[in-house]
Image (cartoon, rainbow over all chains, first blue to last red; front, side):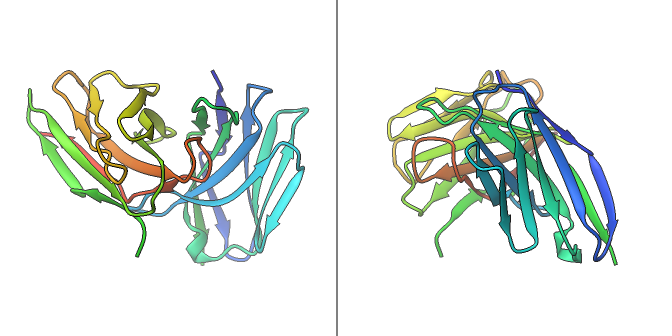
Length: 113
Length: 113
């Protein structure tokens, strides 16, 4: 099955700096890559996603890049703010009739004021 | 407001006891899912249901059972056969019976007394 590895496990950044989280996946058939943000005591919330036919996608201060050849994708957060502090999960899936969504272990991001 | 409601927020289980976690959604979503979250690990799929009266095992179904008698409800029972039940349990739903754009509830923390 699909194996998703996520790095780093923790990330501390100064407010206003950028944060980058990287994920690698093992199954070259994977074609959908979402990112979820989980605030303390809450369920994860989808913040951005990308499909394998696109190399980059941006939504305000967050962006995701995908390198299919190397089988890795990254989340970029620019101009970080205290409310960006959370746990971020990447995931990879194969769009098919069967359910296959594999999550990374998560990255705890702390934005220092 | 539309969303997914999980209850209770905290639950304690005694040895040999079955407990049931509630998950209700008013989003009119076809698919519903149960995930288990352990510290430092990614989300692991327990069971999922693509349609009423049908459900499939996920990666870690042993010791758990579910039912899907109504579109809105997908309760999870943690049986006494689950020897390590302490975890944070997340329910999710999606519009289509595939694994894209999951909407999560706020979770239930289950602990063993």
